[in-house]
Length: 255
Ligand SMILES: C[S@@+](CC[C@H](N)C(=O)[O-])C[C@H]1O[C@@H](n2cnc3c(N)ncnc32)[C@H](O)[C@@H]1O
Image 1 (cartoon, protein in one colour):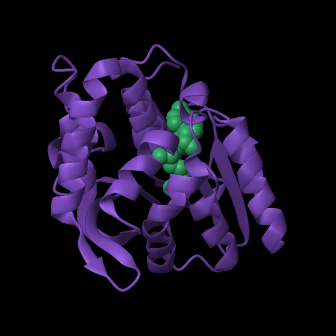
Image 2 (tube, rainbow, N blue to C red):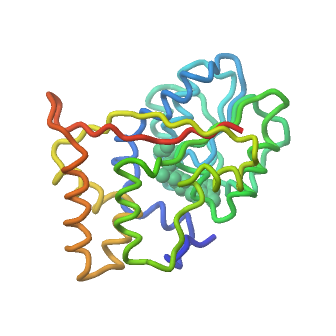
């Protein structure tokens, strides 16, 4: 499976950098998603689980069973380490979200935070999510809203790839094209907290796969791109007691 424009398979791509470091900065949406679902006693599958932030929350909140699925063995190893540290019972499964080796109707809740949306064939990923969930169950996934910092950063990076269209998950119409006309899309927000705008950009260019890969592929153009990203971060963040805070909108799609 190739990431568009990257010529790299998804497993290698997402193993670039250290997703655990940056992903923990935006773990709140997964926690809020689980809190809103009332998962106690229900069977759950978290697709594209990464280091397992959402799967671990499902287990903490009393789901009857939790399976975390991801294509990256390295990220699953980190997820398993975190589960062991908290003595949480989660099954970790290395698989592509478009072809999950689990039986149909095995879950009451299927989640994916900032994960399924990155599949090469999102319609197939959504079809898999629907296949896994029992009648009356919940399928919920998140994506970055175009109306906030991550939308701004994505658009800044896209200036260097003008031929690549905006992602399907940055418009409600695009989401409904992929996930069905009945999908509901709700914008929520969380506080992204970092030491300073400069420190945040530095973390992103070292550890976030999309930004690290942009830095590598842009070469000399990176310093101008970096300056634009830093300016976007500065204008969206306000200093607070624990560092800088940026209110970041994201979308929650429910099938
Ligand atoms: C931005 S991270 C999100 C991880 C996690 N859900 C979270 O909220 O922190 C994207 C994740 O999607 C996974 N991923 C991307 N494409 C995938 C695919 N086709 N099948 C399974 N996992 C995939 C990556 O390995 C990575 O862990």
